[in-house]
Amino acid sequence: MNTPTFIDVPIDTAALALSPVEPGASGTAQCAARSDVLFVLNSLGVGGSECKIARMANRLKEDGVQVTLACLNGPYTLEPSVRRDVPLHKVERRGKFSLAAVLRLRRLLLQERPATVIAVNLYQALYVACATALLSHRPRTVALVNTSTFRGRRLWKRLYQMVLSRFDLTVHGSQAQRRFWVEASSRAHDNSTVIYNGVDSAHFEPVASHEAAKRLRTRLGVSPEALLMGTVGRMRPEKNQEVLLTTLRHLRVARVDVHLVIAGDGPLRDYLARRAAELEVADRVSFVGELDDVRPVLTALDVFVLPSTAVESFSNAALEAMAIGRPVVLSDIGGAREMIDDGVEGYVVSPTELAARLPALIAALYADRRKRQQMGHAARLRAETRFSVRAMVAAYRALLGGETA
Image 1: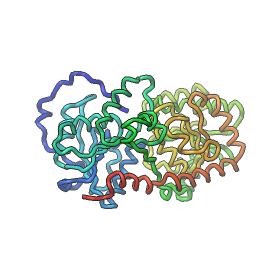
Image 2: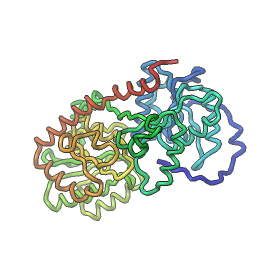
Image 3: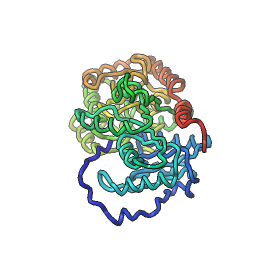
Image 4: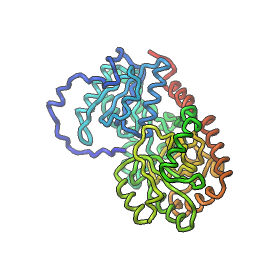
């Protein structure tokens, strides 16, 4: 989450002489005079929320919903994956908090006249709250809240609770996260709901990636008898991938044949590579970078691990691993206990106990292939029946009223 810093921002008078906000390359023409929904994102970089909104925009458009996207700034990596008839507006925010960007967003709202504006996470909610203030024809405002922890910064939580109180509805990724933000007896609770993330199980059919997964394991030097654990995500402190390296060290000392693959990129990549060397496990760790298609990696895995200590609400990466039929080990944060039943589709572990418990859990799964397969089958079934992308899109259609303009 980008945390705003409230300072006196130098006003660029040239920036305030606003030219029309143009759609990006994915928008071939200006929208109709009124859109059904405008999603406001920070960017279209590769990330769980961004991928979810890109997929959902495409599906809503297929259903006849007039969808528009607006990004406060780049990168726009996912832009090619968005349908060309879904306009993308680039607000081009500069600095931490940009008044010029607020005014651009405000004028976009006047231009598009969306029935509903959906802010995708807290920082975007701040911009939407400012842009919709005092509008004579204010659209319905919805905030998708993807943050569950502030790591001691309670003032920021109170600030954003004030921002969210200006919205008509808040949507949370899990019941646990909803409880973090609102009290059950409060008015805010009445103006909130939970919509679980959904995964396309057909897209993540394990058979489709089987051969690519076999080639990947061979390329990584992982034998059929070895266990490959892995994770997908940005290499940032809150993702806590270092605990996977220390787990690998314990397993190596215990002569358990385990390898690790990490898909993703981020500021800690060089540090994690150095730690792997220091722990003498570099020959068993593969950093495969940011991938357009994670299915071969997920299919190659025997166990997916999400060791995050913060930020997770309802992990898309974990859902994708479940859909591919892999057992998952999740930190007990956000909606982890709503995603799986501990001991059935995988395990839920307190973040403070990961370092102590992970080696034994992975070693037990290494020794019991049948247990891994049973958990993997259960994980795929749960993803198909409880967390389908169809159910998620239907929930958002209901949120929008199920009608098109």
